[in-house]
Amino acid sequence: MARINPNYGKLEAGYLFPEIGRRVRVFQEKNPSARVMRLGIGNTTEPLTPTVINGLRRGVDLLADVATYTGYGDEQGEMALRESLARRYARYGASLEPDEVFVSDGAKPDSANIQSIFGVDNAVAVQDPAYPVYVDTNVIAGRTGKWKDARYEGLVYMPCTEENGFFPDLPRGKVDLIYICSPNNPTGSVATKAQLKAFVDYAIARRAVIIFDAAYAAFISNPDLPRTIYEVEGARRCAIEINSLSKEAGFTGVRLGWAVVPKALECEDGKPGVLNRLWFRRQTTMFNGASNIAQRGALAVLSPEGQKECQGLVGYYMNNARVIREGLESVGLRCFGGVNAPYVWMKTPNGLSSWECFDKMLEEAHVVGTPGSGFGPSGEGYFRLSAFGHAEDIERAVASIRENLRL
Image 1 (tube, rainbow, N blue to C red):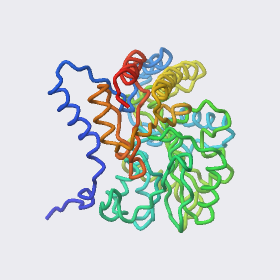
Image 2: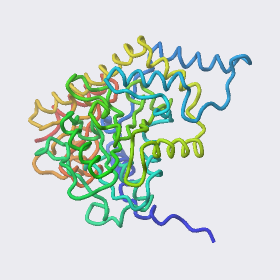
Image 3: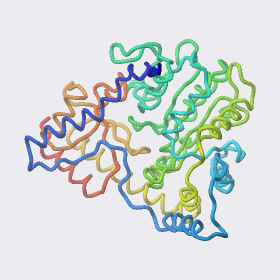
Image 4: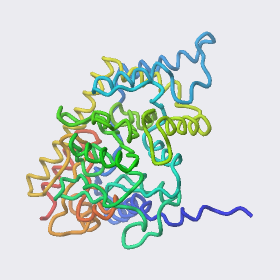
């Protein structure tokens, strides 16, 4: 008799976006003439740049000629692309070998799949609030208990609060897997080298592994802030890094990311090299590689001209973030993020809960954001606004908040 995985029954966080959709539908049914403006989803809106389009077209053209046609490629990615990514890290002062870079179809799948090379009995710590995939995939894997009092039993939550600058203190006691996202989704905070060094030292001392999500690194403009954890001494011994072209280049639908699993990485029962080999085995067993067309597009992104164009795209979204933050602050709302990250983390006014703030923003300003509580217990009392959108739509939404939100 076939049986289901009972851990799926523990999942609670998945209600967030369906509930947002339900509330918006109810509002629109009651207010059919209202124009709802959405600042809640981290999805890119602007077209791919000319150099990147040409790279993708080149990938298609290669498939149209018998002399250049390719079928299956290396599951870990084309060598030219892995070498190009290694050169990018070298510019940050981080030395990587191409076979430590594994190309994939995005950071989200890698964030979900990477935990499969670790034992189910690992103790897991996550930033709180956090991108839900870190928590949900460990729930599905069976590393947590049941949902109780707005959190999962057995999971170590590392609170990110206004008091600690939205970057967590070290876990108390021993944990085995540590999820860190910088620049952070949803808070928009960015870790300093000193903050990351503390976690690296903790992980080395306890032979723990940090899973570092750097998917928004391209949005960092402050040169003193690290764009990769490998800028920190010792990180190759204890950290896996995950990244993506989704936000940097608009590849949310094209799908291209990568994971870095250094050969020097070790864990409690694995010597250096073991985790690199395990991830290689996992990818060659369960993944046939990223699209060859997408990889051609990625090579174009990483070219000098592609980088120049994509930085323009990043600048476009960061200007949106500035408009959001300055607009909210102009009416007395307290905001964080939005400077080196495309998310603005707003403190809810007058002690409102996250969902009460959602309803107030929708009903009065017709603007949709994301309740902070959907990202974890420490997100209660906050509200996330996304800078991904057309500039004119962002400006219209911010104007509506300024004019219509009753504070």
